Length: 385
Ligand code: HEC
Image (cartoon, rainbow, N blue to C red):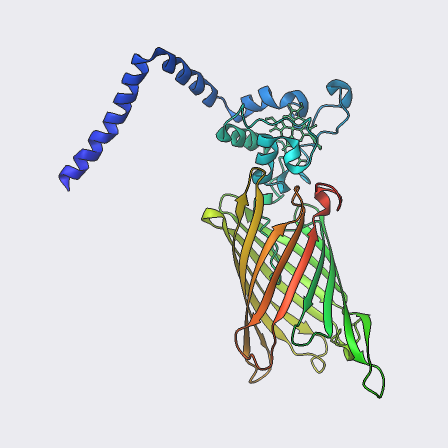
């Protein structure tokens, strides 16, 4: 024990001593070393002033075309509706690899050779001071969208989602979802479900496909707590589904349903993340639909691949739900899935997976699910490919 400790202590002194010696015997090395130290002691603010302010301005607002001599508009780092939502992960690749890393203009230079990763991150930390309002949650807390669990982060997004049941191929259920942020913490959402189903149309058993609209939903969500330090975000939300759908065709509940929920997101070490949502579906007319409670958890790990930082996230969701009637069983499902970016800017993404019942499998079937999301705030649908 003792010997071991002494050995370590010796190691702790020996290493700096040897390095010091090396510095003295190689004067060139010493100069190199002190140069590098000089750069390292510079603050993020100093580095920003030297490398970025000539275009982005000392205040982060961005200089005008007349000063710069080019017409590409500069992003405004002091705009709280823009800067906080962009995570360091994305900005790092823009700064290290240049604008084209996310299909921005090449006038935004690549600093990967001139600055170390630590220096770039220090500069990005400095750019975070330009928006003073800390009500806006940081984009790092915007965890990947799962197929079923509602995320806590507010979005500006359009999503098309579809599910098919391979044992019962005559129904394809779709949803078009429009999400829009307002203020620092809120999001409004419009959900339009629509479906195609194969119906028997004649006495001789002929079938034809019909389409119909389901129960249209309106939703609000508000961030109650967020902290990048603890990596957590908590939101409260509520959805109201109106009985616009046709129940006979399987696309409606024939009564208004109110769904309040709480949603929680947590960043974990090693690019893992955890999300949780719990809530209730409360029909106005309980003769037409049963009250239900649900809880959902999703664990994911994001892999950042390649030179431009393609983020791919496999996830597993576990879903639980129970109708609030006597002798109702709790239903459990597992949803293995993956989310992948479709374009280089990564604001168009695909999620795909299967919802697999874990119990009561004689009454419930597997469904396959897919979504394509477009974060319209980050650019047009056809931009950034
Ligand atoms: C030569 C001028 C110039 C310099 C120097 C410069 N930038 Fe830029 N930067 C731009 C332009 C122009 C854009 C916008 C490109 C576009 O929208 O197509 C941009 C875009 C960006 C973006 C992308 C923002 C978004 O829309 O998501 C980030 C981040 C950024 N710059 C950070 C930096 C940092 C940090 C530095 C210093 C290390 C820096 N820039 C230096 C010109 C410059």
